[in-house]
Image: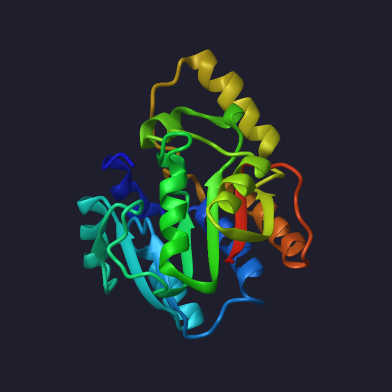
Amino acid sequence: MSPAEFQTLVEAESRLWWFRGMQKILFRILDPIAPAGATVLEAGCGTGYFARILERRYGWRMFPVDLAAEALAHARRAGAGRLTQANIARLPFPADSFDVLVSLDVLVYFHRGGDSAALDEFARVLKPKGLLVIRVAALDILYSAHSRFTGERQRFTRRGLMRTVENSGFRVLRCTYANSLLLPLALARFRVWEPLLRKPPASGTALVPQWMDRILYLPLAAESGWLGLGANLPIGQSLLLLAEKT
């Protein structure tokens, strides 16, 4: 990820509608199955914000990992512990070390096909029957100025993500799209508005006025209720996948 994005994340992760809404969705999916007190690797922890949230919510013993020194510096200042600087495709941990592995919006920074090395490592360090939790950006048509700014190299379809995960030795438990209700707005912005204005690469995680933030949060909150019932969404801007090491 572009180093310039980390400071933006520090300011936005606890406040911006997208982060709050996607966190609500993830918790509605994870809450029924999250093992209490588990030893957990977060592969690509960024600023360490979410590692601390997971630790508080589930009592997990978190091991946050990131390649970027800038990210780990932010995480250290925020009080995250057990930090490791490492390439997630070459993890410095023994086999069968973790009960759960979480990787949120990280695989998109690998070239297409290069993510297999990371998933093979995820399978190696997870214990048998260990839980894999992945979130990625979906659909090439949604590649945007923000994608270019952060260094995103690929986006996924449901079928492609499932196939890649299964090829690394996992059994997929659930895979669903999310951030679906705002898809028409995203298409208009990324495929009409940005090309029309010839928008240069720029962060899309800047804070917005409070009234707009509340409006944009509501569709994600509604989706969290639907997904929490066990139903899936057929298309969307993100993909959430749960899998078990076989």
